[in-house]
Length: 321
Length: 280
Image (cartoon, rainbow over all chains, first blue to last red):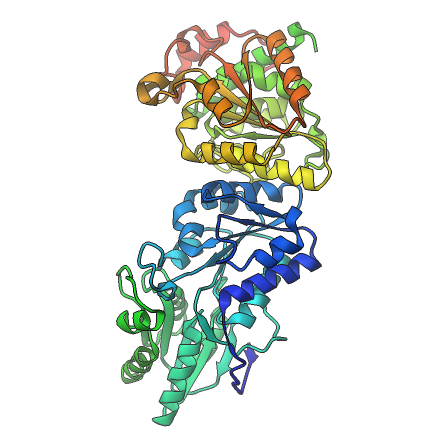
């Protein structure tokens, strides 16, 4: 595991902008990288790539199924296609296209999904997908990555070009604190140990990583030592990082902007129960669709905010034998 | 290639199809028999390809996608007979651990197959992707697809049709197996496609029609299709075929879309199909 000991907020930006910058940069480095977008170029921040490499950018219109199929076909001949649309239209709408033409066919397609989860905000539940991690992690051959901030999303966007095989990269819309160093090394499948602690392990992904850090700081004020792990790769899961941490802390909280069913927490629970079972509490959306509202309001209403992580940590600690 | 020689190959391909499906007690003989002549012509005369040296990327080779993956028996037969893998392997069709899955797959590394298919409507999009990649690569070879007519009821086909015309993907030749039948009955009864030729024309494609059991007509039509390559429009050939062609009791009905013949029916079928190149 990589260890970061101090936190410095380097600013606030949306993770989708990290994707846009990463795409442009990897496009400059690797001429095989091509990009497809289903009428959301601005929302996905793909304009810079489009402007720089117009011949390698494919506007497919509002036709996501065709986009996934085309991306698959573009790998035949050596291209590395990055598809861009909202997470809902990147997964649920095109699950069978991904399943057959990408995952089963072992195609080197990078499915890049923005506006994931509740923090898409005012557009409401039709667009706030909370099941995508589950759908994608169930597919054989699929790698699932949920980076936590602007810098990490940029780094992950570039790193996945080096990985031969289908990848689901999930990021979001709102501006969130940046705390991963701009020169950090992103390794697929290797968790980031952000804070060391001894009483409880908090494992989070995506936007909830910063919330986990906030929770750990609140817990520290109460004399509770929380270990915080950024599990940016849901699949393949860094089982060793989980086992090593829970061996030390004896309990775990998982936190994600996703349905509890099928998310990061499920994957962590499988590791824990097959190794050294310890109490686990789940912070995630509990079998519910979202609704319109401001991102922060929604995180509060659906019980996936900082106080919920704090509360879950107390509960997990109390359940220790 | 002389017509007699093509007829000999397709007769053997038809024997392979009914023997494979019978051997597996499952599979889709009807559409396979209907496309035997077209795929024979494609693999033995039309495609620029290198069966003994298969590569996934297929640079400078023509690429073929079978979008209606359920007619895998005919594809596997022409692949084996044209040298992609040993003919004897056809006997493993649909059996445990085979490379010849019920519907085509890439995960067992069977030479000649570049994309899984079976869930319908996806192959035209895949073909568009490969076609635009060929353009990016400066590769002048072509991309071919085959689709069922019933498959055209899938919406993704029409998403791809819009893209292909709007973006002038003119190095792609799609063929429709227009046999008029699908699992539940006649296409006209299940969900009529209306005027198919006008539909494709309205979508901006160059539309050709041919008889899928007349080698001369197919050669002429494909040559015409080649003359349209590079003209700024994708090309579609509506190919009229008879489901079950070559086996009398399988013709004129949709009932052999997805059923295997029993021993007696197999014998009857084989009696109608000359063994020309040796059974596997």
